Amino acid sequence: MPDRPDNPQAALIAAAAPFRAALLDWYRRHARVLPWRNAPSLYKTVVSEFMLQQTQVKTVLPYFARWIAALPDFAALAAAPEAQVLKLWEGLGYYSRARNLHKLARALAPLPEPPRRPEEWLSLPGIGPYTAAAITSINFGAHAAVVDGNVVRILARLSADGTPYRDSSTAAKTFAPLASALLNTAAPGDHNQAMMELGATLCLRRKPLCLTCPVRTLCACHSRGLEPENYPRLAPRQIEKLTVARAWCVKNGKLLLHRTPAKSRRLAHLYELPSAEQLGTRAGDFFGTTAKPLLTKKRGITRYQITENIFAAEAPEPLPADLEWIALDELEAITLSGPHRRWVRELLRATP
Image (cartoon, rainbow, N blue to C red; front, top):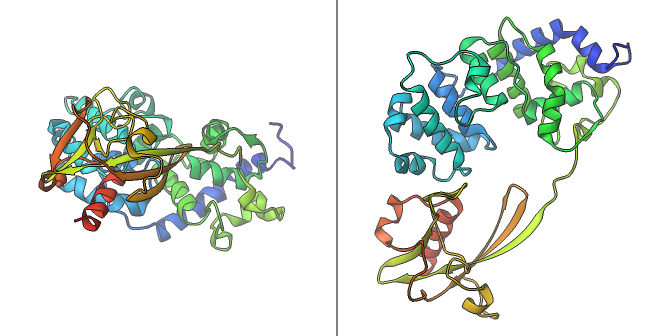
């Protein structure tokens, strides 16, 4: 992009020094008190970064506390069985994060010292460019700028970038050079955390709190009178609607559940209420076309909007593969996916 006076990115880079100073001063005065920032350590940073992927801070807080109490360091995590790891993660979703964190601990535990450069972290399980930059800048002072959805939003507004992007990942790659140009190399970890904090608390997707933004005077959207909520310009996600029928089978004090096979990419070894297909038939054939569900729930997973209907049912004989009877008094000991845990508890309270 040519270096012209009317080029907001060039103007922002030219004002990098006051931008860094204002951002860092604001962060050090207003940063939220978070457990991974208190008595920080590499392990706390790693665990928090994995948990915070696609998950809000307020959701992560109790999970983080429970995790650190049970598995306080890489050695403890590396030695833990997968069942314990998944149980501690239960309810956070995206369980591949837990498995990758487990694999990462096993890769790091035997090393004499952890790697310090972003490129070295990129070869480890579950680590992408954002995570590598966050971990190494915060813990080792690496000169690596983080670029996630929050940072994309900030940079798009600061530079009034109206380019239409296919998705946030595409935008992140485009904004990476700008993020690097603005990085405060004297305090890269605090700078990166400040950018994440700004996006999470002030430069919000909707109804941003521009009046209290520490870098408002350097923002092209502000100076040009543009509506910040229009930036960045990401293509709308295509949502696909799905309907799933599930069975509620209780017999002799036991609940019929489906255990996801080990080869599954998302939910390996986790239990869920069985779907009609897992019972070996179509929903209409098994439950009947006029059956009324005991419970109907809606949820979103990535690009899917899912309606889940749970019906009272009799278990088929013989049981199809991967279906198991679990005693009701043992349900708390197994790992159910988060939504299914909530539905099971609700149905147990509502049914005799």
